[in-house]
Image (cartoon, rainbow, N blue to C red; front, top):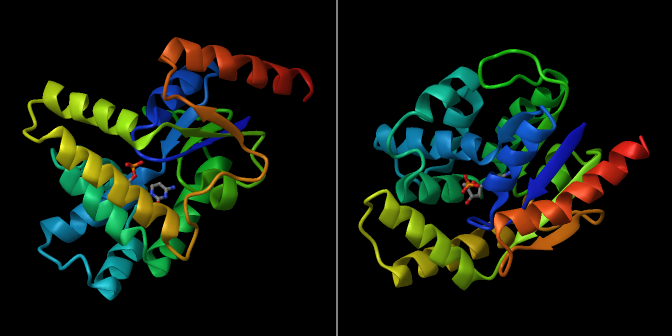
Amino acid sequence: MIITIDGPAAAGKGTLSSYLAKEYKLAYFDTGMVYRAVGLQMVLTAQDLSDVSQAEKIAKQLTFQQMMELSRHPDFRSDIGGHSASVVSSYPGVRQALLAMQQNFEHNPVYEDGTPARGVVYDGRDTGTVICPQADIKFFVTASPEVRAKRRYKEYVDKGIQTTYDKVLEDVIARDKRDSSRATAPMKPAEDAILVDTSFLNIDEVKSKVIPLIEAKLKNQ
Ligand code: DC
């Protein structure tokens, strides 16, 4: 089974994707990682983020293993990683170079420990539209920018990262704009995606919306 979960930052995609992967014993591919890996590699090698050809070169050379190694860097999940990912992900050549790695995972899905899995939960911005348009079931998970900024701000505070709510909100809005206005594979729901607005729902409420839909799909397969 292939499930895709797309939507903007801090909408609750990651929590839902991890839960579904565990529940249905599927591998989990957080596709933001490919862009975070390229963005962080640009930062670590002191490249200018606006250098498109350098970003393309790094993307072409990126392997799954290197991505996993970079994911252990403290800035991979920080706003440095998030911002650099958002910038490089707007370059069509970078997206093209990273397409095969994301699509091949469907044919050879593995759990984190490397053992084979029967299917995948893809989490990203374009997984239902571009990476895996043939997915069995697609969700587009969203929430208002204010609610998402509040959640992200709390995560930063919990991690001891110094910032302000206003700065986080500004960043959320800027990222939404960049992610949804780029020419190649902009963030948007697939035509057959089910919209889930998590603004006023906790994770248990989200689960109870989503699980019956997956169960119905499984029954019809
Ligand atoms: O989900 P995330 O915060 O890790 O994503 C980081 C950036 O990567 C995000 O700003 C947009 C980009 N991205 C993308 O363009 N396409 C995807 N499928 C996943 C992420």
